[in-house]
Figure 1: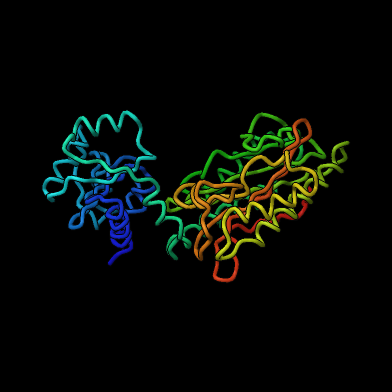
Figure 2 (figure 1 turned 45 degrees about the horizontal axis):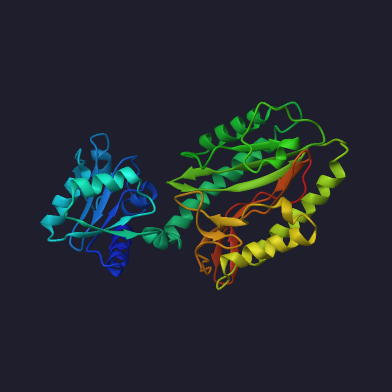
Length: 363
């Protein structure tokens, strides 16, 4: 049995646990996980005997090539009516759907086009399977991270005062594409000087100045999977705030080390957050660290497990889960520091997917 067939069977068993005879999947990451199909449009329908992938005319040939385990059909204009007809062929009338992914308009269409179907709400059903990665997934993720690491090393060669934040981002993004990335994991963050207090400060026209810190948060996609890493680098030179920022840097570095040390099987994701956050709080910067310590990475750059104070689901870490550890301190008007690595949980701890040195570095 192929990997995608096995995933489909496991997903259908979970749907059966909530009382459904079938599973309907519309979300792109879950669709790709179940089928291998990388197109931007499509619907997956699973029943005990058959597997369908419905897509439009742009992708029919691609779908047949990428999802050989599925019956590929052209997507009808009234897709929920089409789904109801397929269910009737199988003698089924109850289908689980991704309640946390559907819009109100999709729900209205489903109930109007297929009133005879009993739609059963489910949340995070396929995501429960995705949270523990297979060896093939980890290999692809390692390649995405390697591409990003190599591109960052090239950026290190050109980093200097006088560049715009946007120059740094463009150079990094071009290098990732040249090295084989399919695209960006997310819009590249380059935040220099006082803009370092913006956790998601996308690259701007601001010119880098001597003595400043520069935070770079970036990632590549490869084979549909994402990488995610953050460095904060220092440009050579003296500035009044330099000593304070160096102090902040060392606090964040210690917090990240504590968070990483907490990553191992049996630990709750919230405990990783607590380990890192306690270091920052003890140094008096607790109010300057507002986001969670980490998150899962995979077909989405932000997915379960969530290493937060009180996540909605506090996952117990297991081998082959992938999580980031990315504490930060943000001081408006002064700047900020964030350090991030993506790691795989192993039977006795973790191993890195991202390898850029997180020690203090100056250019």
